[in-house]
Length: 377
Ligand SMILES: [Zn+2]
Ligand SMILES: [Zn+2]
Image (cartoon, rainbow, N blue to C red):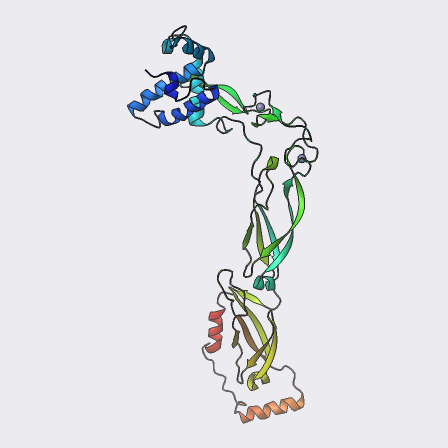
């Protein structure tokens, strides 16, 4: 015949804590709600009974000396229900948790810190090429005085007198099973099981303080407004020396006076005189990549685009860059002196343009192409 020790799978000299652990483990797998088999129900009863005997020091002593628990108590039918109440509490904890404080034990003061989010403004040029950006961040850092221990030098947390270090206090609750004991976090130690009697002055016993620190973030080429860069472990330090959360840096790209970004392409406008458009010219343009020579062909129309390949924004994922698109705008002279006006009239006459018919036409050609291209802008 197997002993109560065999049933729980513990040795004869097992501690109360070991017995409790073994019982909880078995109760979790054998409880009728979890494991509806008849065999499991019988084993659950046996396990619970073994626990009732072995968790009660007096009953355990009787059982150890006589080999049965009948010396003073008749097992199930006996007069004392103290052991049963105990088991019910454990079943409650096993299946319904211990009142918010975790699995019965005290809660840890040490927790991971929160993630932090800051936004940083960069210029368009920095989005094109990437930049190392210096930041000032206001976050929690580990307290330099107590190094996260929360205590004044030479002192340490002491066991809470109210809950005896368990972090939990017991409460009697009426239920359909009669009166059962349930547990709630201890109000005196906030469920930690320990009290800091002599807290660190600098952090008020929190183990961390607020501080402004500077760091450099590597902003990769190709970022856009809304891109977030994650910096692991650079967020808020956790309470009581807990690990830090992450820092997220959200990018905002300033508008540029010259270039407008569309995807990874850049757009800019170049004004050229009417004569240059007609005769053609070579120009040098200031771009993010320095001076670039461009060739305006004779007979250039307003709205024509000169594409400078690979001078746009670096692709954030993958290789290469977008293009720089230069939109040509033809300027008509506003003021003409007598000689200029005379020349232009001669030109108009030569080209037969002095009697323009004034006929409307459907928008087409470069006008439509441009509209298509910039439809989303
Ligand atoms: Zn401190
Ligand atoms: Zn307490």
